[in-house]
Image 1: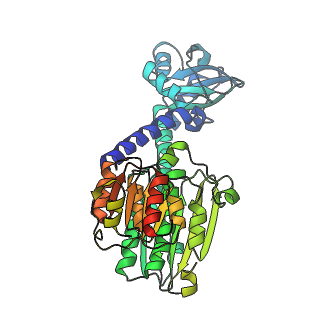
Image 2: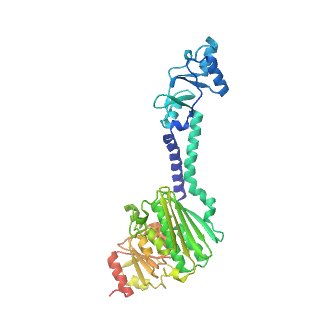
Image 3: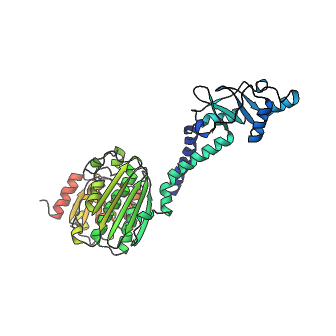
Length: 316
Length: 114
């Protein structure tokens, strides 16, 4: 199973990078409001701006329109053949390769591969200059985006080593967290077996163990079948057992229906695995003394409590 | 009803002899292919009757403390299911009978059905 997980991870990483290339727009990566000169400025002015700002190229703007681009080579040509009092328009390149701000950065990557230029001007729909982009800007934007995405992906994993203090009660006897992956039928139920083992070792009453197992199993299966993966948190307290599941989405569109016996959104394939009878959440609710659920598109959270040692509760 | 009686009266094959094969007394039957439906019941000393051949049957049986599982329609367990049943010490039986016939036979044996 480890190898399968690794494979998924590699695929996911790949997608993260691809997604960055195709979803981050030039606008988000570029340096907005870059230094600029006008065609009527002198080459001296342009040289000073470049020197003071450590730039190797400057866009030349006439009004709002991009008129050309001036590079260090143009400055050198001016030193060799002319006067620094000459106008920028005399030396600038008019044949400029442009990027549009709404383009995905995949275009920019292509341009850097295709042309030898170190920076490209960026224009908006009205053909006005809105930024400049360098290879460094691209790398920074991509890394930034990849980081954000990975953080999102790892958010749940990070909770494993860094539990939310709000989740832990001061009198907690045992606290355990488990990651449950989407569609991982092969391992579905292992978390429940683990919890059951813990409770048996502690000498918890069989009737309680059964109720906890049913709740844990249904919640675990829900993570596998319906969520994009999530975490199951188990806590043994002196007087009760608490289980909480948090998933990464996609959320339950109609909570009321989901809590109705027999209502199911499971596909045929899931049903062929023995799940999707529409009894999951109702079963959890039935065995719990306290049941709370909240759900939106970012995920679903279920919190349940099963009291220990009360005969009335056991007869539920 | 004991496993011995089941094997004597129902045409079947023992795939795995569980830890309590010789001692278990079966009093109830849960039949179905939806594991959540099985989890609804509270009965003790159950045997599960199902056409589902996945690990989840064994896990569900474990949760409800079922004594064994009967696979119907001549179904064979998936390799991982068989392994898990062996590890859990759960009795696993396969019969060529369908769900209805199997349940009737079991009912007769338990004495709940005449």
